[in-house]
Amino acid sequence: MSQHPSQPARLYHERTKHHLDHLARGPEYLDWDDQPDPFRRFDGAESLTLPLIADRIGDQSGESLDRPWQELLDGTIPPAPIDLASLAALLQLSLGLAVWKRHGPNRWALRCNPSSGNLHPTEGYLICRGLAELGDGVYHYAPGQHRLERRCRFPADTSESPSPRGREDGVRKRAPENTPEIWIALSSIFWREAWKYGERAFRYVQLDIGHALGALRYAAALLGWKARFVEIDDPGLASLLGLDRDVDFEGAEREHPDLLLQLTPASPTAATELTQLARQGEWFGKANPLGGEPHFKWPVIGQVAQATRLQGRWPQRPPAHPPGHPPRPIDCPKPAPRLIRERRSAQAMDPQQAMPRDDLLTLLDTLLPRPDRPPWDGWPHQPRIHLVLMIHRVEELEPGLYLLARHPAAREALLKKMKEEFDGNPIATKIPDFPLYHLLSGDSQQVARILGCHQNIAAHGCFSASMLAEFDAALNDHPAEYRRLHWEAGLIGHQLYLGAEALGLQGTGIGCFFDDAVLDLLGLTESGYQPLYHFTVGKGLPDARIQSDPPYGERVGLDHCSGQTL
Ligand SMILES: Cc1cc2nc3c(=O)[nH]c(=O)nc-3n(C[C@H](O)[C@H](O)[C@H](O)COP(=O)(O)O)c2cc1C
Image 1 (cartoon, rainbow, N blue to C red):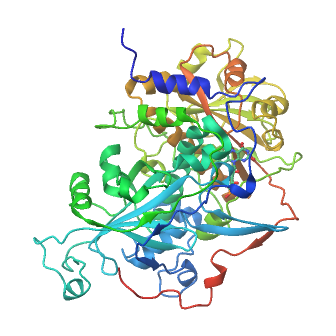
Image 2 (cartoon, rainbow, N blue to C red):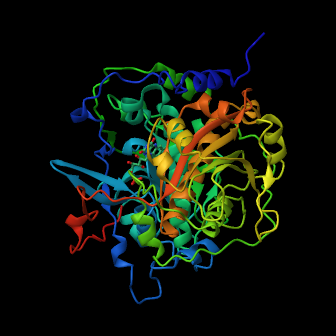
């Protein structure tokens, strides 16, 4: 009998579980001086240094980005013009550097998007048509210098009249009446994560995509833009981004296509047309080898990547069922760009700090699927991830285990499979039908610490969460759903990071957890559900030994908007 197409993904998941008595296969030692380069370059490609958002924060023109967080959530920010300055802000506030950190002789950059081990496997691309300041084509975003590298120039389209400027520099510019169109695509370099985490790295790479998606969605919301998934399969996206061009990646680590988002409304250009333009376009640049001596090789990562490729279309999923109550407002004193850039993973948390129960409900409320609000407007289908909360210190809430069911049928389905002693009673709140259910009272700090690979942050937060996926249902639909489940978990993680920050707390993603021990705790013996990601929220304790420097400090005060066009 032939095996189900999702079998390789299931086997990969099983073999990359961390167990209480042994971890998934990873390198036996690491040479920290030989870490893969976190910055990809395309040598030989023309580059354009982007303006920094500092220019637009606090300006008096009415286009200031210094908007309150609540406006961004409510979608009341008027759309910014689609121009280079807005694109630069979008990229800086999503995939750009947020801060440089220093400790002794070591210096490392942190970005607006978090990443497991700060290894940053995610690469970003911009695709544009009809922008006045940028020729039509595909651009790689280089966050280290906040610049674009032109990978592809789309062929001139004779159906449109080129502007005189376009003729001059050989780049077709669309007629001014045409609305500019922009897309952002994401790809992954597995090696950056595999270097440190070995076989389990593929999971972290996918979680990072979910975070990057969240970061992009929020940066777009700050500009009053939407971010819509464009249906394109992996071979199509690889062609669009030039990832299938062997000649450009000779001796360099390959990138794997993930997703394509459209940021401008009602596009006349279909994804197939974009791919066609890229195939006919002129390509520039060669990928830099990232280094990191491969003392250890993890062929299973290539195999699971192949087995979870999207060819054709994503399976249809039912639409999300939004909650009946209005969203709860967040009173955040920090302007949104500051909050985005100051989001940090807490490395230690205050074990005494409790959070108000109302704040917990507000934070959890932002995880419910509201198709009219970011980030879930970009993710309009029924959720497949639910949260088991280990509540440690929340005022007026007994410590213990709770369930946040992100769609109405999930509570019953899960309770049927979980331990009988879990009561599943809704917690009493003023919000009708808030889907938070009590499972079991008790001190869960020790359990959370152990489950999270013995990390103290899991116990010292106000609460920790395990993101439980409807694993079987998703993989039965399509093997590529394995990746999409992780994206959803990463997106929830990003929401928790920013929501915690907005409430004056901090979060930390926890990719290291003992998979089957989580299932044992809940009594989930069958493979139907699997935990994909853990997270903790609490009061972060700063580390006074570590110094911070501003990002792009070398450029501040310079006339950094060169005004050149590509
Ligand atoms: C998928 C994922 C898994 C992570 N796992 C852990 C973890 O197990 N333990 C931990 O202390 N931090 C973890 N982190 C936090 C990263 O170390 C952190 O994002 C990175 O160092 C960058 O710092 P920043 O989030 O402050 O930008 C994880 C982050 C992500 C996105």
